Length: 200
Image 1 (cartoon, rainbow, N blue to C red):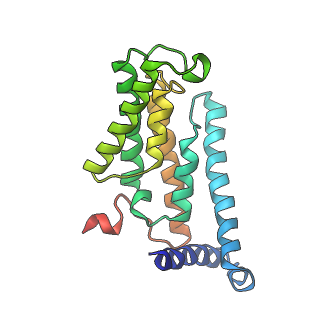
Image 2: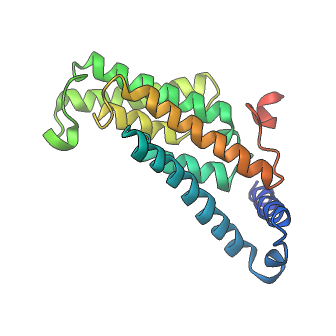
């Protein structure tokens, strides 16, 4: 599996360098260094674009679990967890479970745990949100680990307002769209919806 991932990474980097007529770099430099630079540029650029959208709209388009999602999208783009289906579904599940846990525990209007400290209702909300997010992703076959962080972001009250939730999902969709374009330009057959494994 590790060998296959290494080949995919080299294909990703080589494809992009060929598209930009810079394939000499992959021959002159260590492939790991080239891959690290590829992730530096694309991960950083993707998050910067989303942060600019947040700046312009003054909405919560940027949040911590996007970083982990960006890493998967550009480091292992053909992994099942990086498919658009898993990324979008996973984060939607995380958002819904996080908000449901807030509502069940009566915390939907409460300030964030980082402001008030963690009390028993917040412990219950956090555990419910992550537990149900994990279970639903497994049952629905849409595992995407960063979605667990999204569930906690919501259940800990960092993004607890109902109107913030569509913004959060829009940010994930924007990141997936960027990954689709960048990976396809690099010559990687990044899926439109499902990974090859999910199609069988």
